[in-house]
Image 1 (cartoon, rainbow, N blue to C red):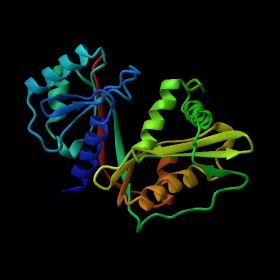
Image 2 (image 1 turned 180 degrees about the horizontal axis):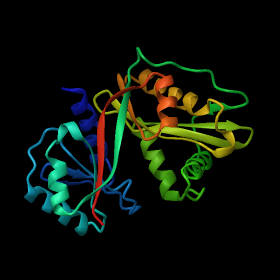
Image 3 (image 1 turned 45 degrees about the horizontal axis):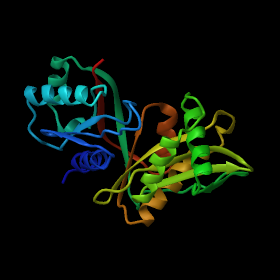
Length: 251
């Protein structure tokens, strides 16, 4: 299986493990009844599956029936004709992202900068602190709902990873990785709150999450980079450019 196909298949598995997945022809929609967020409730195609305009129409209808915004994320190399079909159906391009990959042989683990420590959030209070810090770092409200906490608990229970950076009683940031699928896992949500940036903490978090994946048997970790700052962080700890992913949505 090609690298693109491995990454794409891991997304298919991740979405199919959502609380209420919906299969529509070559697509799976990862529906989560606890939130209407388009960043959680999106679809992706099976790698290299034939896709028709009728399949896209059925997909839109399924999103509408689930009361969710039609949205997709996928590796472009696994569905080269899909963008045209989506544009013809009324979708627009939301973003194009590069994905990077890391293997055990390329991982570089920097020291955790003082005075921070990295730990696993193992209580609801700590999970809420992690999620709140991630939200704040990404410009959202620094709060975590019970549903948010339950979502990360499910991730951990299924073999995913969550890591938080703490200094004293404060959570300075963190990151996570989805449960592995056939030796592949996505690292996501790498976040450092504004007062704690430019100290090497993002790289330490990324490397720690990745190392925990490799220790569990994962052989391929991947993530997305959308700007120069994140590029520098990820390449310094051993991630390398691998392919492209496309986000498309319908309003």
